[in-house]
Image (cartoon, rainbow, N blue to C red; front, side, top):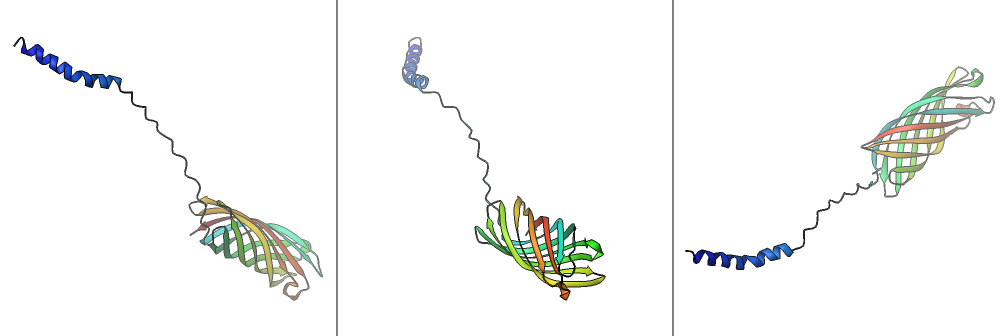
Length: 201
């Protein structure tokens, strides 16, 4: 036994030495580096589909003809429409209603509300949509104590900004023109500036 044990031990060292030597000479593993993922890029809004919303703003009225009067006041209303998104081009149609009771100077009366139907054509900038609009408008007024209404036309421009989660905010500037309002010989111009909040569905 005295001779067997040292011999066995010597054989074990002879066999294991290359393994230990190789292990000591191996390069140290490189530390792990965790890469921070880049934020997801904004993919742009899908402006297509229906939407509804409300607006609040300012209206300025002026007339010419037999009596030149003017007035301005706060107005508010609702709108709803549908858009078709063709990539960079967005086409849509919209109906809207504004109430305001804008008093005219000299006690001439008031512009009570405006109903309108518009066609919009815009350019998709990603998170922002800019557009021009034309359409028809119907205004109701009280002139010299008589309730009157007439059809006219409108044109203007606007923008919408995507807030995410199908919500958008925007603004719109419109000019409405009514020639010979309800056969009174009075031409009525209504300029409106409104802020809008809409929900797409």
